[in-house]
Amino acid sequence: MPVLVPGKLVLDELMRWAATPGLDLVLEDSFLPKIRAAAQVVADAAAADQATYGVNTGFGKLAHTRISPAQVEELQKRLVLSHMCGVGAPLDDTVVRLVLILKAASLAHGHSGVQTATIGALLTLLREDALPVIPAKGSVGASGDLAPLAHMSGALIGMGEIRLHGRVLPAAAALAEIGMTPLVLGPKEGLALLNGTQVSTALAIVGWWKAQILLRTGLVAGALTVDAAKGSDTPFDPRIQKLRNQTGQGIVAGELALLLRGSEIRESHRFGDDRVQDPYCLRCQPQVMGACWDLLSDAAGILEREANGVSDNPLVFPDEGEILSGGNFHAEPVAMAADRIALALAEIGAIAERRIALLIDPGFSLLPAFLTPSPGLNSGFMIAQVTAAALQMENKHLATPVSTESLPTSANQEDHVSMATYAARRLADMAENLANLLAIEAMAACQGIEFRRPLRSSPRLEEAFAQVRAISPKLEDDRCLAPEIQALGVAILTARLANL
Image (cartoon, helix red, strand yellow):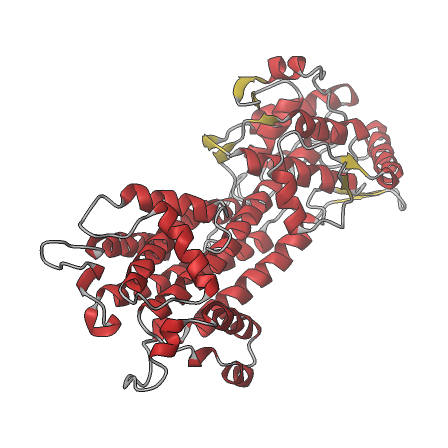
C-alpha cells in the first residue's frame, strides 16, 4: 500500500500513482498531530473577535467584511459554490487523480487548518476512483486554481458531478454509492481547498512526463534519419561535447552514439563519402536536443518542489499560534516551468520537421524523391511532410510564453496573475502534435532505410524499425497514411513502444 509523505514526493512516482485507478493511498501517521494542531488554531480564530482572513471575513475584495461566528460554516460552503464557474471539457482522469494527490499532500503539511477528515475524504475519492468532474478552463493561476479546485471541492460536499468508474453522476449520488457522507466544511476549509496551485501543477507534471517520452522518441527518430540519409556519427563524438561543457548536450550525444553503434549503413560510407558535413538538423542534434533536455530537467526541479510545497493562504503556524496572509497561491513558478516545457516541445519538433524535409529531398538525402520507388505516379511522403510542417507551425505558436501574460481580477485586488493553468494545459495539445510529427519522421526514416537494404542499421535501431513496421508497412504505391500516423502517434505518446 503506497504511503503519502508530504515533502518527499517524486515526479515519476506521482505519475505512476496518477495512472492507477483505485489508488489506495495512505497518509503517513506522523503528519496527523500537525494537521490537528493547525485545525485548532483556526477553530480558536473563528471564535475570537479579531478578524482573520477567510475564517471570519469575506474573500478577495470583500476581505474587510466581517462574518458572524454563526455563519462561519455557511461562509465556506458558499465560497465553494460561488467559485464553481469552470467551463470547457473536463480534465482527464490522470490529471484529476494527480490533483487529488497534490491537494491532499499540501493540506497534510499541517499549515492549512483543515480537519483530518477532509484529507481523508480526498484519499477516499482516490481509492474509490470517484473523480470530480473538473472543467478545464476558468483559472488564471493566482489566488490558486480557484474555479477548477472549487469543482473538486464541490464534489466533497455533494455538489457538482463525479465520474465513478466511467459514469458521470450527480456528486451526491456518487458519494452515496461509495458510502461516503458529504463533508460539512469547518472554518477556513473551503478556502484551503480552493487556494493552491494543484491543478496547474498537475497539468504541468503530466505535460513534463509526455515531453520526456517525446524527447527520447525524438532521439530515436533522429538516429533513424541519420542512417536513412547516410549521415555521420562524428558530431556525436564525446570530445566535441566536452569542449562545450553543456550537460544535456553531452547526454544526448552519448545516447545518439549508442543508438547508431554497430550500424552497417554507417560503416558503408565511413570512407569515400565526399560530403564533409551534414546539414544542421542531423549534425546539431546534441546541441538542440541537449538544450531541450536541460529545459525539461530544470522544469522537473521546479515542479517537484511545487508538489512538495504548501500553496494555501492564509497559512497556519501552530507552534506560534499565528495565521499569516501571503501569496503562495501565485503559480508563477509553475507557469514558467510550463513555458520551459513548451519551448522544449516546440524545438524537438522544429528539428524533427527539418529532418523529414531532408529525407524527401534527393539533393540532401541521396534517396528517391519523396521516398517513393516511383516518383511522379506516386507522391510518397510529400504531403506527410506538409502535415508535419502544419503541426510544427501550430506548436511554434503555442510555445509563445504564457507567464508574461496577466489580467487583473477581483476588482484589482488580485492585480497580477500567472496564467499558469493555461500555460500547463496547452502542453497536452503540443504533445499530441509532436507525437504525430515524430510518427511521420519515424515512418519516413524507416522508408529511407528500406532503400539502404540489404545493409542493416544498428541493433537498437533495427528494433525501432520493426516496431514502426508493425504499425506502418513499407510504402510501395501511395495509400492513405493518416490512420498509420495517428496509430503510431498514440503508441509513442502512451510509451507503448519500448525503443521509440
